[in-house]
Length: 309
Ligand code: SIN
Image (cartoon, rainbow, N blue to C red; front, side):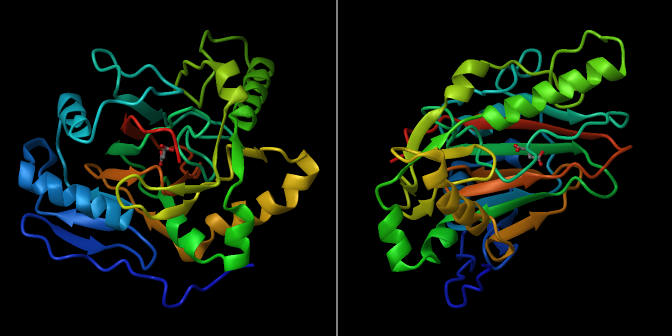
């Protein structure tokens, strides 16, 4: 069932002294103006951090910075997270390339499907960032959804049902899909020496650990804002602790649809130089495989997170 959570939307911008925040959608997201990421001051950073926790996802247009600048900005939030998928670019192991070449044809792009970044880890990344360099003329947008709004919109009865449940997060479906793509590719062409991956991105995966995954609370509390969020996604959520697959199926099918419905979302049209930061603890996001024939080049960094509580 799709909801229209009237009176629960509050994505108004706060008044800041060193930055300007302009809301993107009713549910979440804001553009941050008057900031050059490569020259950000301490005063600006404090307001940027505040805006991130308020709007869940923030973005900056017309940024021009190096991998080292992106690393320095990321480190202002905390140490780098371990990335489950790639080993980074040369000389910058914490800057992960997210690149799709124009002639690549795949079923699944990196970030396809509604997901939280790496919730199958014991300590999933707290914050993720993506810097757009080469952007297709159309397509290649990203969507986010606000998991706090999704939680607040549940009935009190449903909130009490899920209050103490733990979700099993596993990368099984992604790993299986990659294996299928690899098989198909082998059939279609003689081996070209590429490692398995999303198109031309090569991946370094500790597959068994990712599939085994971890259990985390279904209702997660943000360590700074103390907001409660529905910690469920469509890609990695694979079960509920103590329940059989059949028992969990109905509840999970409802919650996966609920968390990522249009009323809780925002959608970003990328431009070269757009830089996005999102709070991975309280939102899901979704990339699209809809720009065949065009190149898309992005660079991602992530901040180490805590064990969800
Ligand atoms: C991601 O899931 O981090 C990638 C999102 C995108 O490429 O739009």
